[in-house]
Length: 259
Image (tube, rainbow, N blue to C red; front, side, top):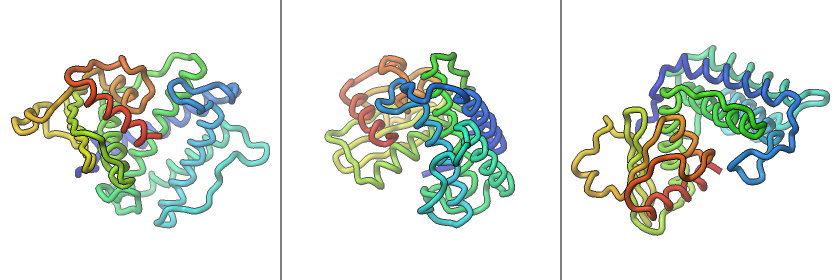
């Protein structure tokens, strides 16, 4: 499976830096108890703590070469949520900038054991949670560029839906194949009782062998499909065609993959 990002690695680092800044400024002074839409039980405060913690976890992982056991998971004494996010992001961006994105680095995905994995993963982690906090505060959700969202669609399907569910031993209850089309590209998400897989096609066209097995299709603008796959938009935000059971099964499994 190809783990390479669809956009330039320098841009991914810029996205991480910019999105972290926007997230931190948005959370500054916000009511921490406000609920994140479409994420039951998740609040603004928990989201900010999570993202600040994840930055520190990723930094430790890169520096030690293994999944860390301890890191700063909460703001320190007299440290605001804004400063907790900013300081974590700054240290992470500085570390990533010191390494060639193609250089080897320990990760949790064999398809991409490079520093580029962390640039991509942290950029999308931050982008999604930035939209969460803006939505919770009932502010306009800053637009996500099409090429960024398209790369995010690829990441959530190949890394989370395909890889993570496979590692967890999750499978479907019935055969179902869904094609996802957006940004001039296409992906196949296949679910069977024996396992789950998703992959990007070389182009937006479906070859004859795959076409005969497709049960349903999802289409929409890249930012919409991206946020929908992450469960951040209503079920009817995207255009659906074909067998609803195949889509519903994929949707339910996406929620398991991304929780």
